[in-house]
Image (cartoon, rainbow, N blue to C red; front, side):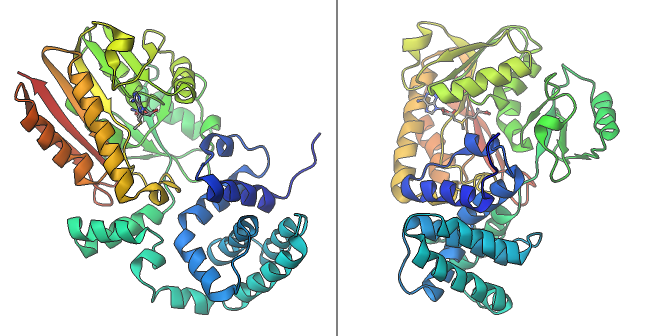
Length: 423
Ligand SMILES: C[S@@+](CC[C@H](N)C(=O)[O-])C[C@H]1O[C@@H](n2cnc3c(N)ncnc32)[C@H](O)[C@@H]1O
C-alpha cells in the first residue's frame, strides 16, 4: 500500500504545473485517491483567487520565489485566509513541510513559514485592506475582463457577476425521466439521507440541487443512469432546437454529452442522433456517459465540425446543435482556471473558429432545417454579434429566436442560444 502523501504537497504540485503550462487537470482532480475534497477545494480556491494571493505576495515577499514555492505559499495563504474548517497549526506546519522536502527548500521554507505566521497574526487587517483594493484584485478577475463587462453591462451588474463567479458552485442533477420516475428517484435520494432542492428553472426537465459535499458517484442511480450532472442553463439551447422523435439530428460539438443526453430524451429513442467531437479524450468521456445512460442508439463519431463532410459524407439533418467551443465566461464559477485563459487575442481566435463551424455545419442541413448555435459565453462577439453578422452574410437563413441565461439573475450558469432556420 502506498504511504499517504502530504495533501498540501499534492495540491502545490498541481498548482505549480498549472502555473507552468496552464494545464488544469480536471480529470486527475476528479480521481484523486487521498483527501480528495480537501485537495480539490485548495486547488480550485488558489487558482480562483490568484489576484488576491499575488497581491499578498507582492506586499509581503521581497524576492519572488520559484514557481513551486510560490504554489506552496499560495496553498498556505489560501487555507489560512479563506478556509474556516482547517486547523491553523496543521495548515502552517504541513505546508512548510511540503516546501522543506523539496530540493532547495530549506531557505524557501523559512520564508514560507514567516509569511504564513504573519497571515495568521494579521488576517483581519489584511482582509480589511483587501476590501479597499480595486475590484479586479478584491474579486480576483482579470482587469481587462472587468473593464469589458463594465462597458457592456454596467458596473453594478459586473460586480454582481464577479461575486457570483466566486461562490462555490452547486451540484445540480437533471433527472433522466426516460430511465426513472422523478418521484421514485427523489424517494431513493431521501432514503439515502440526501434531501435535494428542486431548481426553480425546472420546466420541461427536472433539475435538483444536491446538498453540499455529496459525491455524485455515491448518489443512488448513478450506475443505472438515472441522472446527468448538468446546470439548467444547458436546456436553453435544447429547448430552442426542440428535437422530435423520428428526426435526423446532429450534435456537432457533443462531448461530454450533457445536451446529447437531453436531446435523446426529447427524441424518445426514435430517429437518428449523431454525436460528434474532434478530441479523443473528450470522446472517451462521451462514450462513458453514453454507456452509463444506456443510450446505445446514439451514434458517436470523431470529426471536425469545420469539415463535417469528411466524417459524415453527404448525410443531411433536420436539426443541428452547434454548442461551440467558447471563452466560457458564463461558467467561470464552475471552472476555476477559465478566467485566466481569456484575453482579447483568444476572443479573436475563438470567434473565428465559431464562425467556421457555423459556416461548415450549415451545409449539412436539409431544406427548411434548423440550427441552434449556442455558447456558455457572455461576450456579445461570440453571441449576438456573431449570429447577426452570419445571418447578414447568409440570406438563405433567418434568425428565428434567441435565448439567454445571465447570472446571477438567472440563478443558473450563463448561456446563449440562437435558432436559425433555412428558408
Ligand atoms: C462547449 S463543449 C460541448 C459541451 C456539450 N455540448 C455538452 O453539453 O456536454 C465544446 C466541445 O467542442 C469540441 N470541439 C472543439 N473544436 C471542435 C471541432 N472543430 N469540431 C468538433 N468538436 C470540436 C470540444 O472538444 C468540446 O467537447
